[in-house]
Image (spheres, rainbow, N blue to C red):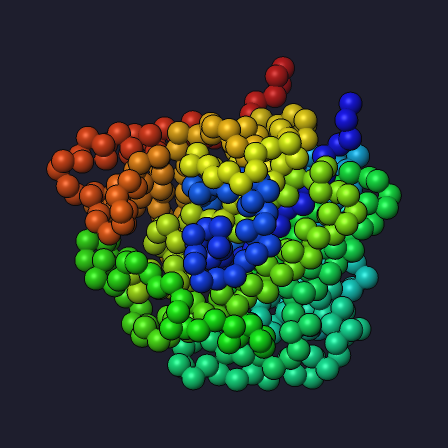
Length: 480
């Protein structure tokens, strides 16, 4: 048998697929991600299982859909009983580690008012959590976590311990910033040094871990989870002014595209200069992430691990970033939010390839296990697509997205090679798009009589998925 493959899984938070050079953006500079794509496969049609952080992160970790793993919304814990990809490879002798933002659990408060929880920011600020704690956590044997975004994470968890030791001056300036001249909400420049930023911390500790594994020769699975480029849009200097707002790629769909959309869609009233400011600062955040992805890729080469390590780059979801005048996330399952970056570099696989095959974030765990030669548990909902990520054909005829909120909004989306339908439970309206059109989401075909048969077929396929994809962890026990 040959040497076991290692895995380096890199994720970002709230990053669009088109915010990479290899994703077709002519302005943003992402040489490290472009290098990764040049050495592997860029999946152009990778979709989240849920468009917000916690549910889709739980899906990446478990290979299970939100309705099955139980974390269906932000603020709902991933149950402790759920088995993750780390659990599966621990049993095969792998070393497993998680660095950065997990977001598998919620912030909680005890009856006495004190905060509680390893991912609870106030619990770290109040000294409730022990900074010497390093796991295990959801199967990962060793963890170094951050909690929060922007300046908020500097005084929390393991990132805080590192900043306190190496850049104490950053803590003195943690809450100092310069507001953007456009007045765009959440757009500002923090005044602590860029060296203390969480993206740099992750690039450094990720590289150190890779060197350790190269020295001891033990197979590993390392998940590095960058908190950026999630809002607030606040890259440190010089990344805040690295891109000219006048030169960024603006949304192709203007607010007038909302005319035939369901009533959940509402124009937010952002001015063009504010959207440009937001995009330019996001580009800066992505470039800082890219530099630190490059640090880890360089270590793989230096330590001769590159030829035995599967490298994956993706995001937990995207951002509307001005599409139709909308920003952030929400009950609008547009491509900018649900079609995410997905790069795979597999030893012996294709190089500089692009794949149009459908892929789901639910497929990440199953595909990793297939590549490692580990049996995929029947409880995983994802499809093992080792052939696709090596440059071959895909195995999906459809990808599915589910989204519901405590307020009662309940949506399901099916994406096929040429259509996308979003069903709104209990409503008379919906969305249907021709994905082969030049601007697929410019025209809603849901009520067009010419597409009635296709709409009915897609709704039946969506219903079949909901009925047939039950939780296989909860099956009868033979002989009981």
